[in-house]
Image 1 (cartoon, rainbow, N blue to C red):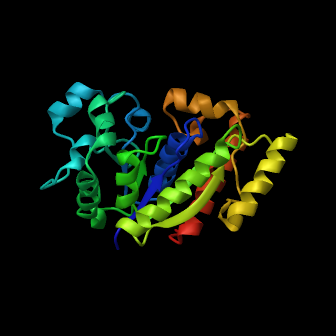
Image 2: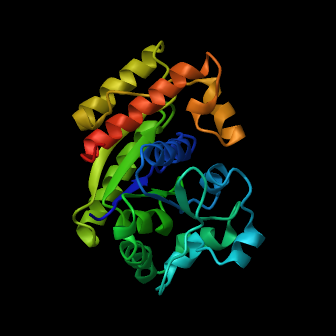
Image 3: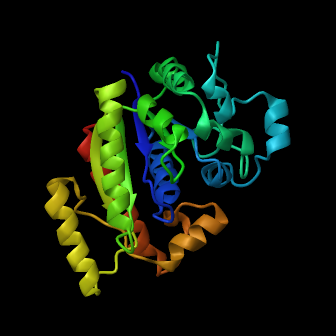
Length: 264
């Protein structure tokens, strides 16, 4: 069975995209699935989290593990970093300039990541792709390479604009080369449930996309920040305040798996 290739995308930053992506990768590996994480976000935060900060740019290059920027040319083979906690990794450097430059590549180069990842698709159950928080050729390449896409969103400021922009991009991608791309839905992050404006924004979003809004969301909780600082999943932060955060995170991941239709 070929891997589900799932992109985590939003055209706005600060929505918890990478946090959700790495937690999903670790949760899937924990249940025994074979997982490959592809870090197409030049910030490299997913790489630092999943490598527990032991993977730095120089030794990784010397070790011969495939770097995300290499996906933009035809490859004879891919050698992911074996990773920790069962998640293999195609890595990005910290503030990776070479990868960032791929945001402006010719359209013809955007198809290479899709071909390269398709070649290893039979080796994994899931290929999770983290994307930059902007509309550029990196995000386009990720969507061309994916079978599914999910959008975390923070409903504040211009959050709804980011969702609409992504939906329009998905429609364009389906027309130009990936007709099977499935939009799984929108995950509400850092929910401000006591705010009247928040309730209004949720209703507006549901009015636009209906059941594509996940029923389980993520509240704004400090232990999530602690988990990211320590490069640990939230369920390994052993404090009382972390328990509801872990329950919500696992609930979102369960709903995500269920919506895609690949349960345990």
